[in-house]
Length: 116
Image 1 (cartoon, helix red, strand yellow):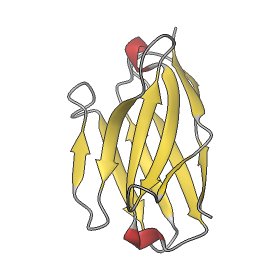
Image 2: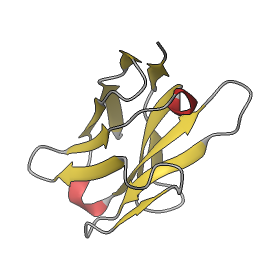
Image 3: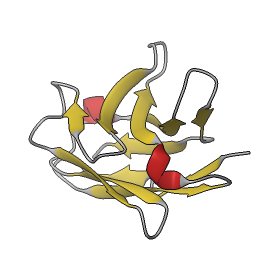
C-alpha cells in the first residue's frame, strides 16, 4: 500500500518562499506520476503542479513562474518549491501519486498560510 507523507508547510509572509516535500513508500516510485494539489476553504481541490514518471511537468496558470515541482527517484521524494508566495496561495496542499485509475493515492495534507 502506497503511503505519502507531506512536510514543509507553515506560515510565511507574502513574497516569501516555502518548500514542500512528499515522501513516497510502499511501491516503486519511478512508475508513478506525482502531483501537488491544494484546497482552500470553501473551494474545490485543484491541481497546482504535476510531474510524470518521465519527468515532464505541468503547472496551474496561477503558479507558473513561481512554483517548481521536481522528483528524486533515488530518494522516493517529490518537492514543490514555492516562491513569491501570495495570500491566495493559502490552502491545504496535498501530495498525489497515480499510476492507474485504481492506483491513485493521497497524502494527509499540509497547511500553507501566506499572511503578514
